[in-house]
Length: 304
Image (cartoon, rainbow, N blue to C red; front, top):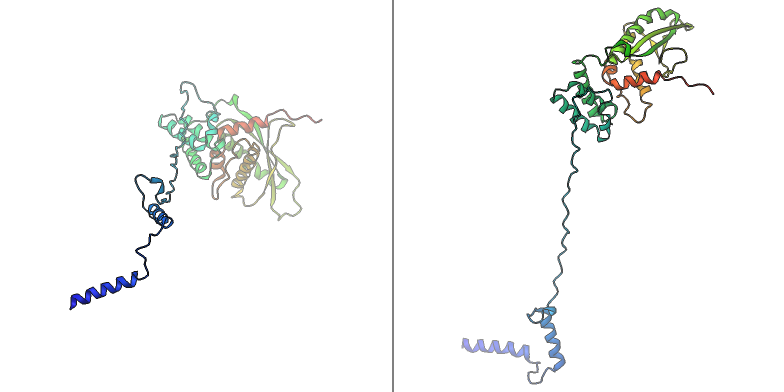
């Protein structure tokens, strides 16, 4: 009985699905061709590869050539058989501060302390150094300058300049020994390159005795009508701070004058709390001191 029911169910399903189908009439060539195209397009065949369903191409990124860093310029230490000059290593300035710093370290490793100092000075005056490189170079100059003698010890080969100070009569006497001491300190800061003479000019006192006394400072070459720096002024405060105030003003005077040469790096600004004499000694290179003296000793321009 179960078997008969199974046949009945299968037969009923088959009859329901095919009751309208015509198994005796040929489907015709057009219908057969359409069915064949549909099947062949879905299933790739060995003898009809072009009829296979197209598979979307996967985009492949082109291979990128590896980035190759430019080789570092070779470090040239120079000829140790000849004594260095004040402008030593200026020709390496276009290679940048980092190159000059590497050069300085290698030179010191070779025991060439004077040459190493010159390389560190090039970082400051021609290397276009950033703030960090400048701080490193100043510290190195300070360390090495203390171990070396003055660049020039021949007094006949110094460059003469004059440090001028102008103030009222009341304060001129107290100011004179400090200006003279500052002149000697500038000679030492320049490593013996300059011979600095001090001159104090007493002018009219201010109308108010309680007002701070102004002091004007400037540098010139020797003789009447010599080339001069611009004038810098400060006011005399406590006698205890007079020397530091004077040195600070001299640093601003010298660094401002040297900064007019746009082709080289200006002296770094004095940091807060720094001693002005240290800034004069370690932030202004010996080459720049010579350039200052040479500039002030140029023949004065004639009036048209």
